[in-house]
Each structure stands twice: as C-alpha cells, then as structure tokens.
Length: 380
Image 1 (cartoon, one colour):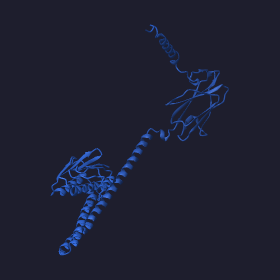
Image 2 (image 1 turned 90 degrees about the vertical axis):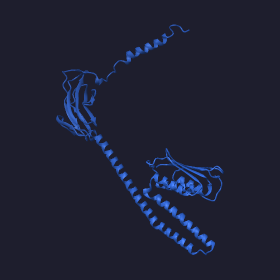
Image 3 (image 1 turned 120 degrees about the horizontal axis):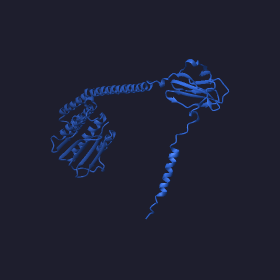
Image 4 (image 1 turned 90 degrees about the horizontal axis):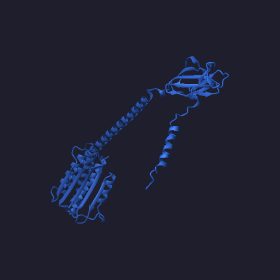
C-alpha cells in the first residue's frame, strides 16, 4: 500500500507551476520605450517643421496631398539643441507607437491610401515638448478601391463565361457540320453505290435465267457472285444506317438488333428470347463508331450461332450497367474450344472491334456446353 501523502510531491510541483504562471505569465507585456507615456515639459520649445518632400519634390505642408503614384515621403524638422526627436504616424487602420530618433527627420514609403496624422515633438532630459500635428492625405491606388476586386472577379467570370460560350458554340457548329457530312455520305452511298449494286444483282439474275443450259460450274459462279452482291448490299445498308445522324440513339440500335435476330431465326427450329430491361425513355450516350462496332459484333455472333451452333434456344439480354449498358448472348448449342485453331476470323474480329470501341468483351464456350458472350459497353 502506498503512503497516504505520496501524492504531495506532484501536488507541490503543480502549485509551483501555477505560482509561476500567476507571477510572471499574467503580467502585461512590457511596452517598447516609444509606447510609454512621456512627461511633457512646457518649457521646451515646440518643434518647427522645416521641409516636406515627396519623391524628392518639396510640398506645401498646409495642403499636403500625396498621389498614389508617389511613393517616398520625407519630413524634416529644424535642428535644435535637444537629445532626440520623436514621431508618431496614425490613420484609420494604423495606431503606431512613437518613433524616437536622434535625427530631425523621418521617412515613409509605400503608404496606403487614406487620411494620416503625424505627431512630432522633441525630447530633452527625458521630457518631451508639446507635440505638433501634421495632416496629410494619400490618394488610394486603383487596387485599394473598394470596387476593384469585385470588378476584377466579375470581369474574370465574364471572360470565362465568354470562353465557355464560344467554345460550346464552336462544338455545336462542328457537330452540325459533322452531321451534315454524315448525312451527305449516307445519301451518296444509298443513292449511288446501293443503286449500282442493285442493278448488278438484277443483271446477274437475268444472266442466270438466260443461261439455264450453261454448265453447272458457270451457274455456281453466278450464284456466288449473287451471294457476294447480297452480302455487300447488306453491309452497305448497315454502314448507311450507322452513319445517319437521325439514328444516333441506343433505342434505334436495340430495335435493329432485335429485328435482325428475329429475321435470322423466324423460320428455324431455334427459340429466340430477347430481353431488354433498359427503359425506352433512357437514351445512352454512345457514339457512331461504338454503335457500328456493337452491331457488327452482334450480327457476326448471331450468324455463327445460326450456321454452326445447332442450338435450339438463343437468349439475348440487354441491361443497364454503371458504365453504360451490358449485353449477354447465350445459346445451348454444341459449343467449341475458343483456343483451337480455325479457318474463320470471327473471334479475332470480335476482339479488335471491341478493343476499338473500349468494349469489355468476354467469350466462354466448351464442346457440348454451348456459348456465352458478354459485353459491357461504356458511355462517352
């Protein structure tokens, strides 16, 4: 057990510390010599103002006004037989102590704008003469005006607003210009290239009818040409659709995907399930290049399922995602080994198109287990 008075040493030190604070810490600070009061001796003669100069030019003390561009003020008293001289400068925001100097002059530089008073007196035998006062005014500089900083801030905001306005206007004009170019290209492709391809296709059909007695080899070549023309027309139609400005919406993309999948499986034994949980009122910010690549990937996936998967059911899900939207395509077909070598370029096409549009693409498949493709499409 500790002694009853074991706490006394700590208490004693605390008491000494408190006494030190009371005796020394609570005393008011000692003022500089110039701030202490001086005994005024009426027998001492009052100081006489000799000369005032501003930036080297002499001024009249009766009506002393200093311009904002004038920076150097010098005040000189008549020398007398005294110990020293003292000066005290005051204005609305300044209340300084007395400045004691052995010389009968004092200098000030870079005074702020306002009305000032300068008290001055002489000192002899530790007594002061009655002080005299000089009144003068310093003109406010531009940056000291009350309206300067609000005006400066307003001007900066107006300039920034003008920059944003003209930049936005420039972007709008560029977009309108680009839409005009896209509309013209789409019209040219549709009116010229597409019509030419249609004419060639019709000519090939006519040629096939007129050569019924031709060799089987010749007929096969004609049909291959017809098929190539048909595929070219379809690709051209997709390109025209992709670059048309009035088709720049996610709703148009999903409708076209649904229509294409329905056309592919309408006459077959494959059941199609198409689920789109993105509200029709929600417009996703996807650009022309993304829209084109997404549809190309989708078409190639559906084509491969139709031609190779032997699936009885295909499910397509489109859903919202924090980055934009997601899409999952699954089938219950025969599947394949994604790592195995094959003649086509389907998978590589998927990958480079997805990479080009910053699409997160993932393919999962195995022999006998169907195929699952997932894409996450970001917005811009």
